Amino acid sequence: MNESINRELIFNYFSGRATAFEKELIDQWSQSSQAKEQLFIWLLEWENQNLQYQADVEKGISRHLVHLDEFTDDISAYEGRATFSQGIQLSRKRVLWMTAAAIALIVLSGGWLFRDHIRYEMYTTSFGQTRRLELADGSKVILNSNSTLRVPRFSFGKTTREVYMTGEANFTITHTRDHQRFIVHTDKNLDIEVLGTEFNVYTRTRGARVVLNKGKVKLHYLDGRARKQIMMKPGDLVTIDAKGHVSEQKTESPQNYSAWKAHRFIFENESLQEICNLFEDNFGLKVLIPDSTLAAQTISGSFTALSAEELLEILTDDSGLSYEKSEDGKVITLDY
Image 1 (cartoon, rainbow, N blue to C red):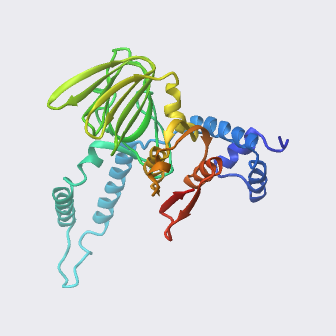
Image 2: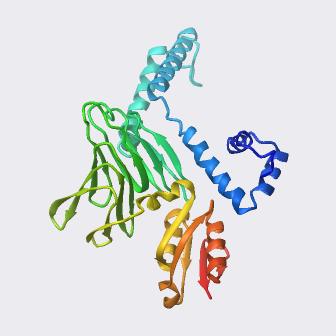
Image 3: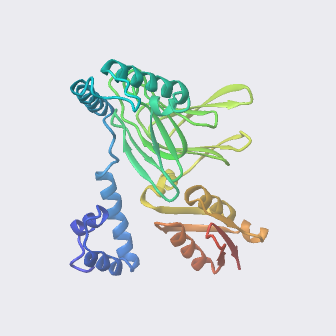
């Protein structure tokens, strides 16, 4: 390895503090597969040390009240001098009344539309992005691409520990002294009840999947009109298809289902069609396979990639396939 490439330099690079010369040096060094693997190891370490910042809502509100007081003081200083163009005097009391009326109108007209943003902290990821969070109770969440997590702004960790998610996320839950339950609600009539554990949840258009790495979770799901439960143990894999059918199985490598945390994609006899679904879910890229026989072919292996283009290049090179992009670059067609 190039002796000038070290952990400190790479961390500066991830933080955006590397010089143009250092960036070029890192780009050249990272071309080899061995260097790229080391780069991903350092990336995972850096991301674990740099969790997403959570806004201090209370402090923000306090600052806003201070600014409001300054605003009313300014009105007092100029009371009697502010006028409309018609020469009508604008008193401090009238200004405050008009301000209150305007705020009330905004709340009444827009409050319903934005109620979720008031009640919940909203965390989202775009295509090709992952995000690391630490919740108020110490639990850690890693959101996969194209996913959303809603956390109650005022009650979480106090009266309840319930969150709401769509997409895919990996959870590491902190156990509390009072054994408070942690519940993940999804949009698939599937709730995951937790007591100190690590698991991966996938919930998208094509169905849902829960894989348990450590501890114990209880699934609550809807079977027709009946509510049912499944108690999961480490290595259990539960899937729910688009029609709501539930299946249970064991996996010897539950960690493979959350390898995306380190930008790795592990396939075990995955069909090309299933891999195409991954491109659409994670990168917003539609991949078409006109040949049904080709779509059914399977791929196994572990691949490391930071982008859709990089993963596509690796897969096509290894399988001897070719691809064409649409003019806007949003649709890919695979062929022999």
